[in-house]
Length: 506
Image (cartoon, rainbow, N blue to C red; front, side):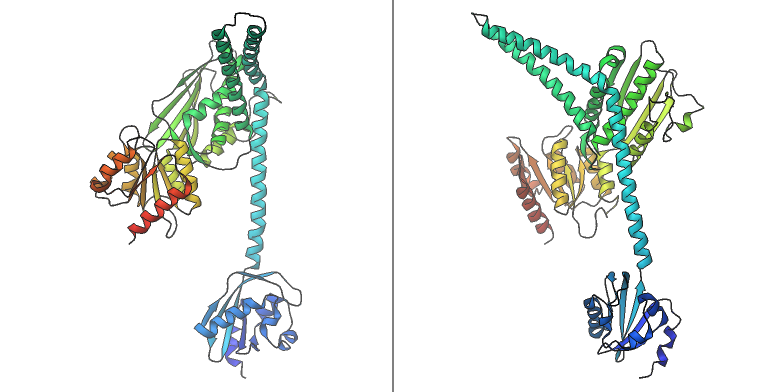
């Protein structure tokens, strides 16, 4: 059989082989010989082309595909030759040409090897980064240990004293004073709860990051960090003021990483105030919420940051502390962790002292980013988008984990105003709303959604006694799909969602 017409493949850089309907080799170019590191003699003595490789089924499948449909293409495959050469990573394309099949081998071996190499290197970098984070946390905890010990010893002393009072009342006092015993028991319990809180904060702070984000209250995370750092002599010498705002500041973040940032910033402020023997030292923490961002700031009345070193404070290993008193990693790590959360960490010198400010996206903004972005295409392909509206972070986290595990894309919101903003900006397939919320209820939210002429399915969620009654009232007038009672189980929620979304597609 003449192979003259296949000579145009001779100079191609991709390996090309022509086989007949019996898989006998009709033609091969030099690039194919280079690809499999073989000789013309071996190929000419091969009865069936698939016998050249360890995975015959890959060749057979693409060969049969071309016979049936005139073209065929394999998945990315890793092959070894029967002569022992490999691995080679290829995608094979097949085209039927009269009585023959033309096979083209796209060699991805170099790309795959580089990808695997860089993947390993990235994993090593990630592990190294995690070790640096953990080392920084442990070093910080070591510096705070004296103050933490003081905070534990105080309530422990109180508990021990009242325990002795109880023992005396039970053993020595013939006319047992029950009120005195109950008071002593309550004081012991309160002291032990204080110790438990301190230990839990320590455990939370030092545990290894799992890069898991959840819905959490920024103000609560901040107060936990304050309890960990504002202890011992720092508590005695430095006045701390926390200016909370009335509404919860719910964000989607890794609370362990966030706490690490706050601890680093507070520790730096405390050290600057004490090392420079500032008169009437104080630290003020303030919170803000504006548009799509929440923020908090830590302001001290210390010496501030000299303008000559301002550009370097976030650089790794830069420190103004004496050797052995600081790693120079705290601010660098903090800035990277905040940027990882799509936020910013900046500082500004005040008339007296310095203010470090952090801005983070609201939970609505960050959950939209996590889900895939703005516009109608949150999520991928046919993945349904569900908006959860509830002012309780624990409920949001439970539903978020459950629904994402079931293959849904989730956007969270803590109130009606933000939920409406999301619905205006984004295509949502289903709304699940709690009924009892601040500002306006889930029922009022449903009314506003319908006022927007939105026919999105809505599910009510409530543990209130009148929840079912509200659902029955709104079922027809607002077209509410169904009602889920708190507490709920996974199967109950997933079954309700499946039915509602299935009905909306009919």
